[in-house]
Each structure stands twice: as structure tokens, then as C-alpha cells.
Image (cartoon, rainbow, N blue to C red; front, side, top):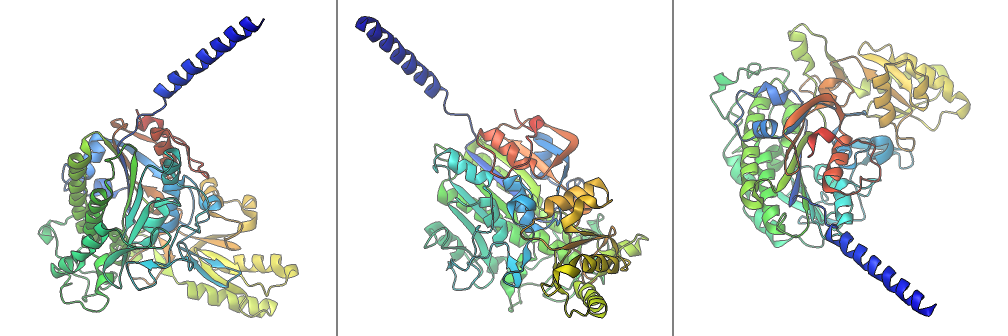
Length: 542
């Protein structure tokens, strides 16, 4: 009997050992050396084709012709703004779940607005200003970049880079090695003590080049003769915002600007060029894509948003910015070919939101459009509440197209106040609908809009009532444009895939921003982020 047990034990050990060897020999999944996530801030989907005849063959066209494009990718929530957009791309989640419901939101407890990445527990690194008091602490779930770090036991490196702090921090996630953003105070890329105590030497060397000063000295004129910009309106339009150097026309003279000059840099295409150079420096300095594990570089080009807000989608400024970005993108892809190797890296490119046409542009072309201010809405509602319910300042705050009612309203009156507020909102010609956010399911609005509002509603953070503008109406001054609504001009975004593991082709089926991180996770054989509700875009990956 003892002999049988011994033989049986020997056989079991041998089988277990053999199984271990088999498992270990197939344990390492194939992955690219580097993943580069690119978000173009405020890029409408139609920009891919509006300027296609002028784009080079190695920028956007390279991604479209040699990669995979999802032609009908939409944002599945409102408001469509920068912080929720970057967060959704990298978490595969929506504001109802991930907690980043806007660039800012109102805190009933603190009675003030909260900025999406604010964190008073950390301090600036690389600057004496307060611009570094930022972290991903307000972000609830993990990101796909976090999941890559977890999957490789933190051997993979993750770095986020953008002019905007939120464009660098939220994509990089909680466990990132670093996130870097631009500080207007010193014209340098900085970070916070959340990540490190001192800037790496390569960042210091990059900052010491003083690229912002070099770019500003060049002024901003059109890349090509201005009469060739036939995809845009004429250069001088009264509904465009004045540039810092004065006026709305080319050339924009930046060389002589002294006051807040580094903030001005953000509103020129040079801000994107500098971001690209910083991305290259990060690859060199951190040796990204040159290690045994897959690394991740999250890059956001922010200048497109600043320029779009000021001049609008139909401006020569916008066209020139995208032609220059196309050249920057081509340069970056060529750099990746040389540094990482052709076919050794994966790139995806998308946007955090789009933008509306400037209402005055719509009007001059016989289309509807207009603006209203939050101040007008708030004063109208407060006057009505005081007259009817004898409560002063019944509206505590308005932001993200949501009304936060005052805690001074008695619970017994809340339902009636809400009904009265909704009725008053509908008296505005620009407002199409208004709803009680605690009872979205009872509304009769179109299903798609209802879904987007539901996905954007966070029970702990959101307001009490949301209003929806008619198409081409929004809150603003009448100069320039904005975004934030459910409409396709704000929610239809590009989504391009290229490189390692990506098929060549396209799909016209409807896909969503939430699908991006799910697809990246499938490509890398890692877990989806902890709040992900997206689905894998199977057509795109091999």
C-alpha cells in the first residue's frame, strides 16, 4: 500500500510539474513595446475629412489609410467636456460611475465649485505656483493605464503629458509613474508631489530649452498663403474673440507680448508642437518602449481647444491649427518608427469632445443659433422663486447645464419648486427641455438623449434639474464657441487605431468612447478598468 501511495504521489507531482512548465511556457502574452494614446482636445469627427485634401500622407492620412477607423464613435453622456472625456476614454466608464462629472462641479457641502483634479494635500514640483496642487484623487475607478501597471506588477511605465493638468493626470491614472502639465507662471512643464519630490533631469533639461519663448518669437502666421484656406470663412469676423495681441486676423503677433505670455502660447498651434516635443523627450528620458514590459504614453493636444473656443470651427485659425497638427503628428509617427520600430507600437487617436458652430456664423448662413448666459438664467429663476415661494436665492449654483437648488428650500416645498423651475426654464426661447434629474425615467424625451443624461447623472455630485438647449444654442458671450451638449457636433468624435495588433479597415457601426479602454485591454490581454462598461471593438484588432 505504501508503494502504491508513493508511486501515485510521484505521478501527481510529475503531472503537476509538467502542467506548470506548460503554463509558464505560454504565460507571457504578446504585446507591443509601447502604447501611445492621443487625445485631440475639441476635435470634431468631420475635421478628418474637411481638410483631407491638404493633409500630408504621413499624419492623419497615415492612420486612416493604414490603420482602422471607427467612423461613428459617439460620447454616451452629457456634459461633453474635457475632464469627463479624457476620463471616459481611459476608464471606459461614464460620469455616473467614474465621478468626474465636469471640469468643475458644485459641492453642496463646501458651497463652492470643485475642480476635477484639485488636491490641496499635494504641492507643485518644478514651480512655486499653485498650478501643481493636482492629482487624480477625485477619480473613482481605475484606468486602463492603471490596469497595465497592475498586470505587469508595476514594471510597465505610464506617463501622461498635456498642456492642461486634467489632460495629463486623468489619462495617466492613479498608479502612473508621472504626469506633466504646463505652468503659465514659469513657462515650464511641472508635476506634483503626488508623483515625485523633484523633476527628473530630462524634464529639467527640456524646460531649460525655453521652447515657449522661441515659439512666441516666431509669431503666428498661416502655414500656407492665406488665400488657399478655402475650407474656412474670411479671416476677419466680428464674432471671433480677439487674440491677446489684438484683433482677430492674421498674422497674430506674439513676439512682443509680455503680459501672461505663456498663457497666450496655449492659444497657438505651437502649444501642440511643444507637447509633441515633450512626448519625444519622455520617450527618451524614461526609455519608454525600450524595456521588457509594455509602456504607455498618454498625450493630449490641448491647443486645439483654446483656439477652437476663441475662433470657432469655421475659422482660418482652426484650419491652420489642424494642418500644423497634421505635420506634428507625421513627425511623431516617423519618430516612433525610428525609436520604437515599425510595427512595434500601437497608437489610438480620439477626442474628448467636439464643438458647435459659432451661433453668429449659423445665423449669417440662415441657420438657427444663439446664446444665453448662466447669469440670466439664474436671475430669472431666483426672481420667480422669491416671488412665488418667498425664498431668497433659491438657486444655489448653476454649472454643467444643471441647477443646484438652495438647501433653504423646505423639503415639503421641493417638488413644487422643481416644477416651477422647470416651467420657468421652458420660457427661455433657447431651451428645448428641462427635467428633474431624480426622475429621468419618467420623462418623455428621446431615448438617446435620456440615456446620455442618465449616464452623466451622478447621484452624489450632480444637480437637481438639467436643461437642454435647442441645437446650435448654448451658454456664452456671443464671441467664439463652446461645447458640452448631446448634439452630434459635440458628441461625434474621431477614433483611429494604428500599429501593432491593429487591422487595416474601418467600421460604420456605432461605437462609443467607452469602448476604447475595453479594446486596449483586450489587445494587451489585461483586465478592463474597474468601472468599464464598454465593449471590445473586435473588428479593429487582430
